[in-house]
Image 1 (cartoon, chains in turn red, blue):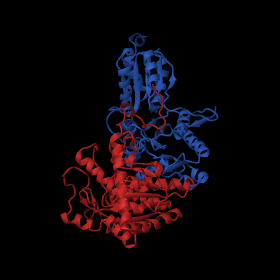
Image 2 (cartoon, chains in turn green, cyan):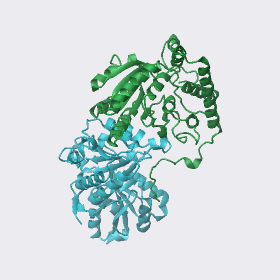
Image 3 (cartoon, chains in turn blue, cyan):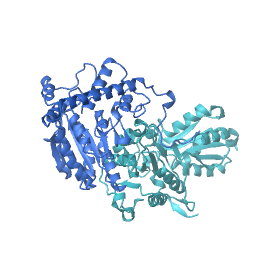
Image 4 (tube, chains in turn cyan, orange):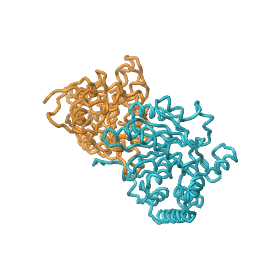
Length: 313
Length: 327
């Protein structure tokens, strides 16, 4: 969680100072417990699909920070060689199957990855993250229906941060909760405290176990919050939300909540400080690596368009 | 050589590849229906490899992408080409782009099969020829076979290819029969076929415009005009060399294509020849294509839409060398 938090803070710092991150970035600060609690429930060879607000997700799945930061800066050393950027981080080495900028589109893809795992004779599970806005798009409903029909080993984790860009979920969803939509597709649907990493881990672990055993999908709705606006666009205010709401959620900051739990369980403050220092050094190293990396060469423009380029004159 | 219908060639290609490679699966609505090339597949390969599909084009296209990125080779059959539009986001934004977006980490080996039901009185929402729209999307290979042997050989190559391939079938060719080579028959993607050699005018014909062009060639040969008929077979990547070589020989080009005129496949061929073969041209390029209007329901009106032998003949006559036409 701390690694994601410091990584995102470094990203915001670079954006603010205009030091080399182009385009829009969607910061996931505030949602770390949901991301980390979910990914910790997975095996290394399990799959994870993210969405547009997913800098933290590959990190939680075990990806190295250097290529992630280099990708955000559009460098050739980036994890996607500078072709994807902020909304398309992917690291197949750790089962991170990529992220989509189209809300909800990753949902059926995760179902397909789980279907494929079964057919290939493995017990790999696919975990799919998406925001609350995705619960209103067709691919959510088609994806859940297919997953249930196929008893696919997939876990759907909705990061309900209450806003789809500027619009509150309460104004757009004809249902009391995202989780209750699971009933329509004959799968368990649960709501968890997305600010408590242990609660998330326990709920997702149960779902993963179910998925791995061939018992089918689960929908988990994690109540969480993004501290930042929809995207980093200077001082533009994109979300219509009450001023004091952010402060209220900050009082249940996932890192503070978990630190308190650790201290109460006897972990020494010194140990937490060491982790702080270690993470700060890791992030600083990633930033230095990214800044020192070259931009892609012009002759890389066409690289990776085709898996099998055909010689045609 | 055995004779086979276009439809049976499609079926044969899928059967051979599914028997050869357990990673090949089929996502298709009504796969068990008796008219479908997949009829009987559920019995042979089981519902795991040929799942019974809900009407969820966007959903099962997305699922095919997820399965393809993790090791399977799905064939997605849209039954009717227009139904692809429902899955457009998954095809255009994801299947075509994921490999590039992820810096080469993913391959998306899917064949999207799309039967084009035009000239069949099914009106505008069942009669599109959408390949020009997808030619505008880098990352998709596009084939339009015009005979059973190519239907078989191109589909087998498409299934084995590691990129997404969109495979367009003119439905009115499904019933046509033709000879198919015995044994394993693969037709490479990206290679045009010269269906008829000739010296006077090149006709580049796509899909079921190929039989129309061949019929026109037969009629015109009686009048002393010798057509060369080139079938690109693959539109992306396009075998430019074969087309340019033919135009270099004849100096005259007619393009016959059942798709719409504006920004169409014919427009692309014309642009390439104008850019790279201008010196060879001895007459203006002529396009015999569908006008920019929706396919009407009434057969009386729809008959005006697509390249016919008569339209190809008229186009050829407008550009053929004067001394030939005078004979």
